[in-house]
Amino acid sequence: MKTKRLILFASGSGSNVENIVHHFHNNPNVTVAAVLTNKRDAKVLDRCNKLKINGLYFNKTAFYDTDCVLNILKSLQPDLIILAGFLWKIPSNLIENYPNSIVNIHPALLPKYGGKGMYGMHVHQAVKDNQETETGITIHYVNENYDEGAIIHQSKTKVSLEDSVEEIAQKVHMLEYEHFPKVIAKLLEK
Image (tube, rainbow, N blue to C red; front, side):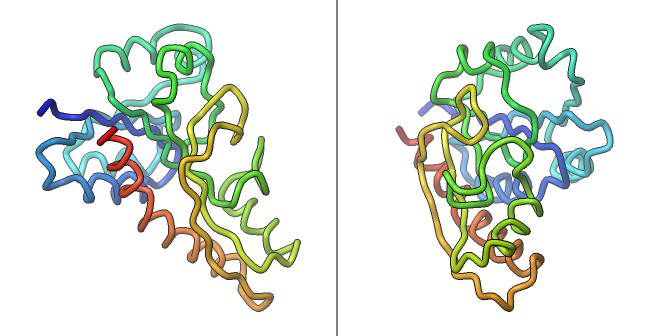
């Protein structure tokens, strides 16, 4: 069986990256080929060093104005590209070259609380402000619009009026850690 190759994109601390790496650590059929980040000082790069995974930084010009990132991806030959806390909109040259191969996780039940500027604590604050009784995660394919690609998986958790924004975030993180690696594994089996 050919080894399946994952490329992860992240902008922040990389907790989802680490969780995914640990999930596939003992699986000889899956490898995390590299982690790409758009932030030179992203904590995910420290995690990459500890996990002994290639971490690559790129800037806005390399991402949007050239084929630099596309060429890196082509050289790494990913079976799936996973956005694990990556905040930039994916350019059309990547979407065209990797149709239905770029997967994102969003910290809400789309179509609610999606779109530009809706990430991390902004989403959880909106959930609290609107007194929602549930929230969750959405794992979806990436298309040319923020958070509008076909939904692959959703998981829900209850929210109470007493929950702080931090408590809501923690509930959502637990869903991410539980479900994201499993959904990725199922996609790799296709």
